[in-house]
Length: 375
Image 1 (cartoon, rainbow, N blue to C red):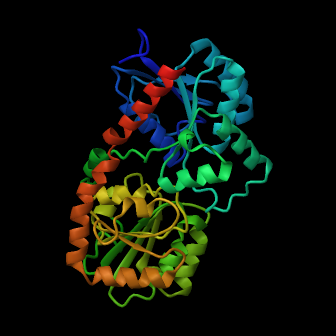
Image 2 (cartoon, rainbow, N blue to C red):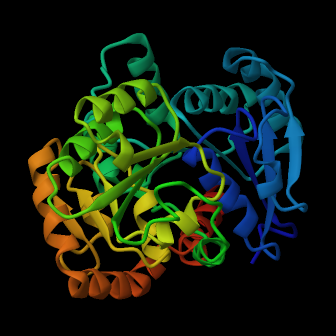
């Protein structure tokens, strides 16, 4: 099914070929769209970034050669006017605002889809600021807002007073086969982790920022009775503070913080427990990734996402956010119960399939067909 006699041209707008999970999600969308039906186009503000190797070679790349978001509005509007894509989609707050403006300035009536990846109210982002009001203005004028979890969808609707039918929930697409393959690669030696099988291995992955609650996790493991090692993979502004906390608690030798690791999945696969200690999330992308590695997961029941991914006690465990005591008791219980951990991990390998790239991308394809036929 195509629009008229041509494929549906889907243009995804990103600042560059790098960044975080939101950008990688959009590259996943471009890579997995059905080439019989869709013509994927990536529009970049600038050609920088390290994700080019993740993008399939048949995705057309357009570069606007703009250094700043504001300077990209007119070039993007001109490109939309000259190329007439059937759908334009963007993510990230400031990029979303700029893309909506470009769509209006192009005067082509092309439907613009914006994606919200965070629970902004839970994150404490103020609404009554210039930035907050600009986002509200843009989201009310976008054809569709995609929220990556039910919690984010509810927050977007309430926060910006949007109509229910203008906001669609689509989970993050996870390339499960790729993750499982990567998890079987040989892990590089990591002192205290790969060379010590007599300790319970606990792992966490994410940016070292207050949102992720890693200081709560470090405080929690310091109270454990069983022998343990904690591996935190990631980098960020809290690196020094977290290492100082571990030192003050006298557990520096047990807390391993190697920074960024390109392939964290072999380390996740060898862990006894994966822990997400976040205060808030948009979705919690690392949870299904850990599930795909066959590792049991404990996550906080924070807004939003973990309680939509995990069925408590079935394919994972949930605990209260913002509490090191809750983390301690749940970690201790799971470490003492290998049968429960194995059962949850085995069940998770099945339940995580609903987040597979193929399943999720079909939802994007349905949306793009609907918008193309309406425009």
